[in-house]
Length: 137
Image 1 (cartoon, helix red, strand yellow):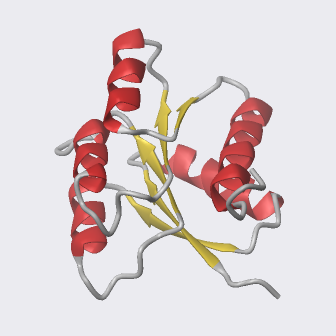
Image 2: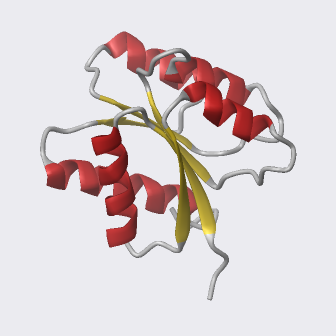
């Protein structure tokens, strides 16, 4: 059996976090989800040297206290984390948000669709891509 992967989910909305966890479970991916409801707590865990580097991060764009783009900026400016795929999750349709996320190095920008099926499919597709061995995505 392959090594168990670890995804960080940084999402302040409990319902969206539940759907993300459900999507990953339904995809039967061999991965653990570590969820953080605040950007500051996620950053503290990511910068703790004893914490293993996650295989992928799903990051909400708009959160209280520390915005998703600031979390992304800090991830990309940290050598031990800079290679980790980061998917930005958002309900925002603002092109400026997407462009800023792209400039900061987001791997994927995922719009939170209104339909359950759309959201689950988008999350599964992103996580499969993030966890695929290099060259097989």
